[in-house]
Length: 125
Image (cartoon, rainbow, N blue to C red; front, side, top):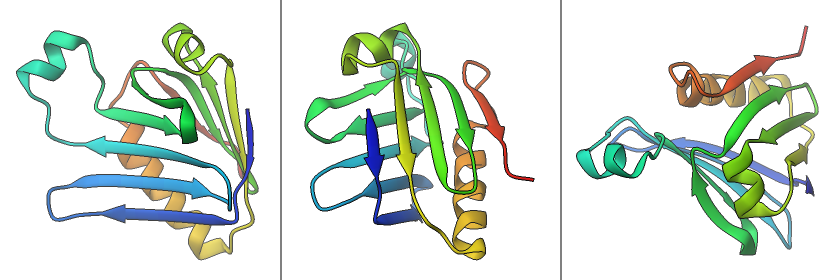
């Protein structure tokens, strides 16, 4: 799946819930993260991040690899993600100023830095 994002947003609320969103006039991709992790999350095998894709819905624990480049974000899905989204990747293209890109990097690091099941790479030199 590919998305040409015209809008990229990064927010964190007072409850430490992080939302990174990519959208255009028709579709969106959202990564949501909560630092809070309860017994229900553990019992269901849910990760702390949640990926939602437009009308396809959302899933926990669905990402294998994320690669952040200067003009795109490549998400390789694991078998849970492939089953849910019927694709093995999500490629999000965008144009960001340096400060916006740095903010995106900071938020993605917050989401994935402690998740050993996701291989997060920053590919920009």
